[in-house]
Amino acid sequence: MKRFMQKAGISLALVTLFAASLFGQKMTAEQIIAKHLDSIGTAEARGAIKDMVARGNVAYTALRSGGAGGDGAFVIASEGDKSLLGMTFRTPDYPGETFIFDGNKTKIAFAVSNTRSFLGDYLFKYDNIVKEGLLGGTLIRGWRMHNATGTNARIRTSGKKKIEGVETLVLEYNPRRGSDVTIKLYFDATTFRHVRTEYNAIIPAQQGPTVDTSSQRRETRETLVEDFGDYKEVNGLTLPHSYKMYLRLDSERGTREYEFKSTFREFFFNQGLDPNSFSVN
Image 1 (cartoon, rainbow, N blue to C red):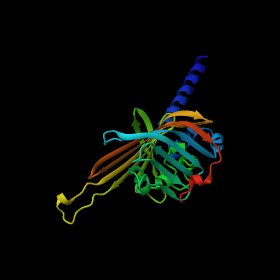
Image 2 (cartoon, helix red, strand yellow):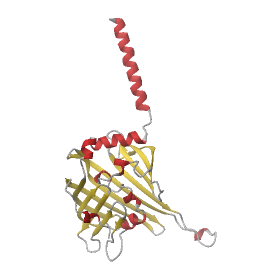
Image 3 (cartoon, rainbow, N blue to C red):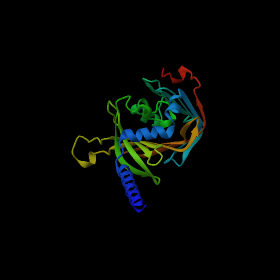
Image 4 (cartoon, rainbow, N blue to C red):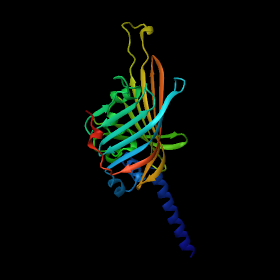
C-alpha cells in the first residue's frame, strides 16, 4: 500500500509538472485563434449562420467639444464577407454614418453636404480595416478570425497586456498587401473572447524648406479603438452586446477625440438579406 501511494504521488507530481510546463509554453497565434473561435460557439453553430443582423442604440460624443453629441440607432448587417454598419442620429449637422463592403469594394458614405465625418474620413483613408473583415469584430459574419488565412495575412503573437484589469493576449495583424495602419487584436487570456482592436497610423512630420527647427511640423497620429464587452449567448453563439469606437486624431492643429457607445438588444439570423443592402453604387 505504501509503495502504491509513493507511485501515485510520483505520477501526480509528473502530471502536475507536465501541466505546468504546458501552461508556461507560449501559445501560437493559431492556438489563440482556435480557442477564440471556440469561445464564440461550436463549429456547427458558427457554420449554421449565413447572415446576421445586430440592432441597438448608439450615442456619440465629441470629447473635446464641451460634450457635444447625440444619440440614435445602430444596425450591423452581414452576409458572408459582405457587411454594413449604419448609424443614424437625431442631429441635423450629423445625421449618421454608413460603411459598406460588398465583398470587393467599400463605400464610406458622406455624413453631410458631400463631406465625410472624421470617423468616415479615417475609414476612407484606411479602408483595408473594412475590407479585411476587422471592423465590427465578432458582430459581423465575415469576421476575419473565422478564416484568418483566407487573405494570407501575417498574424503573429505580440505578448500580453492588461486592459481595465483584464489580462489579454495580443495578436499583431498585417494584411497581405501591407497597411499604413498598425493593427493589434486583444483577446481575454481566460475566456479568449475578443475584447479590443487597435488601429494606429503615424504620418511623419513634414519639414519646411530649411533645417531651422521652427519650420519642422508635428507628426500626425491617428488612432481608432474598438472595444467589445457584455458577452451573452444568442442562438448558440456568444456575442458582445456592448460596442465602443474611440477615435483620436493628434496633429499640429491639436487633439480631437470622438466616442461612439453602442448597446445591442436584438439579433437576427438567416433572414435572407436583400442583396441591395450591400450595394456600393
